[in-house]
Amino acid sequence: MLHLKDIRQYIANFNITNEEQVFIGKLDNKKQKSIGVYHRKSDGKPFIGIGGLSCTTYNIKPISLLIHWNKSQLETEEAAYQLFERLREQSNVNIEGIPIDYLCLQVPEPQNIGTDEQGVYEYVIWLDFIYRKE
Image (cartoon, rainbow, N blue to C red; front, side, top):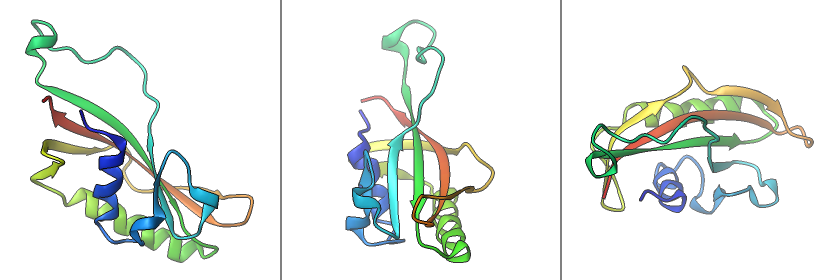
């Protein structure tokens, strides 16, 4: 199974921000220049291949990335697009021994969600990690 902590490390390895500034669950005290890695709510039935669970060869992990940057809209947008482009150009991905067959971006570009209560700009990227079952 692909765990959120493993995806967090994968994103941290892009070096868009310091490793300790990439979080799961929630942003620690909303530090600037941080990236949050979250499960993305999804609906519908779980994917099960024809023939049942034993014939199902892959799983899907829906993820939301929050880019919580600073009070400069331009710098925040640049950080969000840097992460987006890094994700878009990935191939032959392997996370903790799990082959990732496809990183399926669910938005055409990073989505500006405005500012938080402190005036820090934020962007969101939604993507699905499509990975082989163990």
